[in-house]
Structure formats: C-alpha cells, structure tokens
Length: 252
Length: 256
Ligand SMILES: Nc1ncnc2c1ncn2[C@@H]1O[C@H](COP(=O)(O)OP(=O)(O)OP(=O)(O)O)[C@@H](O)[C@H]1O
Ligand SMILES: [Mg+2]
View 1: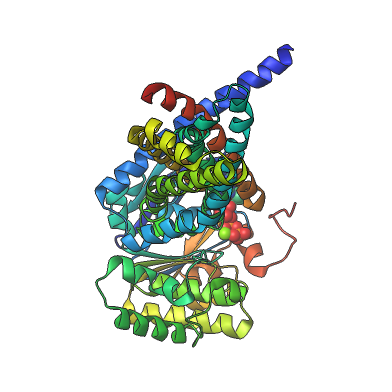
View 2: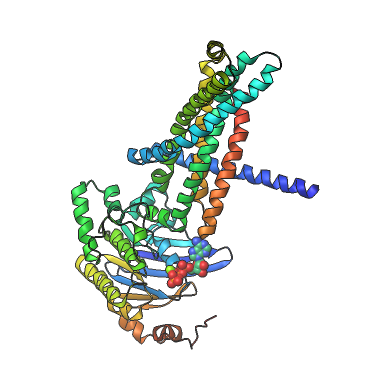
C-alpha cells in the first residue's frame, strides 16, 4: 500500500480487566478513504481515539508518518493534532456556543482570518452539509442528525490532512445519509486527503471505501480493497457483511 | 466506636488525597497559564459569572450577618456596659473573618458548583476531548479563566460584603438599639486597621483560588454520565467548603 500515513503496531488497550484492543496491527493508507467496520462495542471508537492521542495504548506504537504519538506530549502532540480533524460519534458540540461559533471554532483558534471571512466559510460549509440558515441556533435546539452534520462541518473546516469520522451517518435518514456519504466521497476525491471512517452501513462502506478493515475481538481479522473484502472467505467477515445473527459471531 | 474512627480516618485520608491531586492539577494550570495567557474575553466572561452575578447574594448575606453581629454583641456587651464597642466588634469580625469566609462559602454554593457541573458535562459529552483534538489546551481554555476569575473576584465581593456588613451593623446598633452614632463610628475607625481589611482580602483570594480550583478539578475529571456530574458537583461543594474553613484557621494563625 506504499507508506501508510498511520500505523498501529501491536497495540494493546484494556479498561480495568476488559481487553478492548488485543495486539492490533493496522495500516491506514495515505490519501485514501479507509473504512473500519466491526461490531458495536468492538473498539472502533477506541481505535479512532488512539489515532489522535485522546487515548494512549497500554502497549504498542501508533505511528503517524513514522512518529510514535504514544510517546509524545503537550506541544509535540498538538503539532500532530493540527493535521487532523475529527467527527465524534455523539457530535461533541460545544453546547454554550452557537452553531456558527462551533463550526468556526478551529478557524478562530488556529488561523488569523477575520470575522467576515470566518462567517462566510462557516455558512458555505453549513450549506454543503445541508444545514443552511442554522448559524445562530444553539446545539440543544438541533436534532441528533443535525448535530452530527454540524460536527462534520467542524471537522472539515480547517481542511485537515487527515479526517476521522466516527459513524458520520448513523442517526440520519437514508437520503441525508446518502448525501453525507457522497460528500465524504467527493471531498476526498477532490482533495486527495486521508479519511478514516467508522461505519455500520455495509452498502455505504463499499461505496466510499478504498480500503476496508474489519475489527474483531481487538484485532484486524480482514482488510483490503472492497473487491478483496468481498472475495475474502473469512466466515466472521462473511457473516458480518451478510448481517445475519447465525454464524461464528455469537450474539450474547 | 472503632468503626466510627475507621470511617473518620478514611474520610480524612480521602480528603488529603483529593487535596494532593487538586494541587497537581493546579500546577498543571499554572504551567498552562505561563505558556500563554488565555483570551481576555474568556476571563471577563468568567469574572462576570463568578463575580458580578454573586453580588446580590453576597449583599444579602453580608448585610444580615452585620446586623445579627450587632444585635448579638450588643446583648453581650450591655452586661458590662461596653455597648460602645459594638461597632468595633462588627467591623473587625466582618473584615477579618466573616466577610471572606461567608463570601467564599456563598460563591462556592453558587459558582463552584456551577463550574463543576459545567466542566463535568463537557467532560462526559466529550466536549473536552473535542478541544483536545482541535489542539486547544482545555486547561488554558476552560480552567485558567475560571481560576483567575475566582482569584480576582472573591476579594472584590469580600470588600462588598465587609462594607454592607458594617452598614448593617451601624443600622442595627445606631438606629434600632440607640448607640450614639459618633461613638459607634469613632470606635470603629479607631480599632480597625487597614491591615485587618487587607488580611481579610488575602484570605478571600486564597478561598477564591480553592473554590474555583476544586470546582474545575472535580468537573474536569468527572466520569459516568449525569450521575457522575451530579456527584462531582456535590463533592466540589463539600470539599471546597471544608477546605475553606480549615485553611481559614491556618491562614489566621499565620497572619495575625
Ligand atoms: N473511557 C472508557 N472507559 C471504560 N471503558 C471504555 C471506555 N471507552 C470504551 N470503553 C469500552 O471499550 C469497548 C469498545 O468501545 P468503543 O466505543 O470503541 O466501541 P465501538 O466499536 O465504537 O462501538 P459502537 O459501534 O457501538 O460505537 C466497550 O466495551 C466499552 O465499554
Ligand atoms: Mg463507537
């Protein structure tokens, strides 16, 4: 795959006595969209949080362009983080700020742009995610799906080199979900940036992904291009793609 | 009995642990502030919240405290004909002790709890993580402004409390109980030194630091959803109040 932009090397992570990542090895290809699939509670969000230094591994390395961010701190880690944007699973909007201030927040903090220019960019991006005219609303006044799209706009506003999306379309109606999937595909194709997406939507996964990785019991059990994944005989993967309750994956 | 002692012991050890952790947190905060100061807008916002919006409750408690002090000391002093010292007693008690302590307890209840609840909510809804991810130091953005506000505004509130307390005492002593106004004022001025007021303000600043630092610390490390935020809030109020009263003793012992 060439030189991966992010690489997990034998990463272990436990919470108290619950093992979540168990020797995870994962390579995120540069300038592609990688979709991570896996069961609910399987550690996808935890994996994403490791990529940006929100969580630290108990053991192992997380390399971003060859630099181990698990060993970094303070200003060094912030330097890496400025290359990232992230959409949280629950949005994580600042509930004391308006939608416009939320989306414009990274611009205010990290650029010298003037008020007018920030307003303009914020409105434009809000229109792109299908939310024109909500600038002055507070996050509490939005629906779950709207909050998600505001979070999406906030993650994209700085046009970061790497964007992490934690379930960008869960909770959206099918039409809006498709619009967001398209937005992800188009902006990626246009910009050639690295996107990492967590998704439960198998159909959408095959539409947007260049690379798919399945996380199961703390490890990657299958990865490859959409075609390779379709042809992969792994019974766990096959059951997951079929989406049935019968098979090697036990529903407890 | 031993069970009771054990419980008490565990409580004390728990508190000492908390104080240690809060101190470490405070050290982090100082480091953050030293690296780069927070935006003034954020500091002003917090000064408004911690300070300006506490004025009414501080005025109310300060006035009545001054009034009851005058009443109590009057009944006491009358027994040996020292009514003329009521003004002195009220002013000294307010400036040295009740002004700073009452003010900070009221601000703890009003703002310390709100700080813990707000930061706690931001923690459990991943808003603090969102700041971190955007390479905005959450300590600098959230904690430093609040602690600065406490440090600056609680002494200001304390001055207000001292003032209305003395005024309340004057009202009760002179207008209601009939102490001679000239004597009342003269004795107040004669025995109360600027140092008394100043030391009271130093106390107030320390308490302001304590109550905001603990509110921030408890909120910042809250976990476990709405329940966790509730617990953080209660713990912040209890711990800050206890610590204010304990440190009050030691500050007094050092300063006077
Ligand atoms: N901060 C935390 N403290 C303790 N346990 C945690 C924490 N974060 C995650 N976990 C545990 O780690 C496991 C994986 O969680 P994670 O959020 O990564 O799941 P997920 O794959 O994103 O699931 P979903 O698809 O439902 O979002 C869960 O069992 C969860 O209980
Ligand atoms: Mg998740």
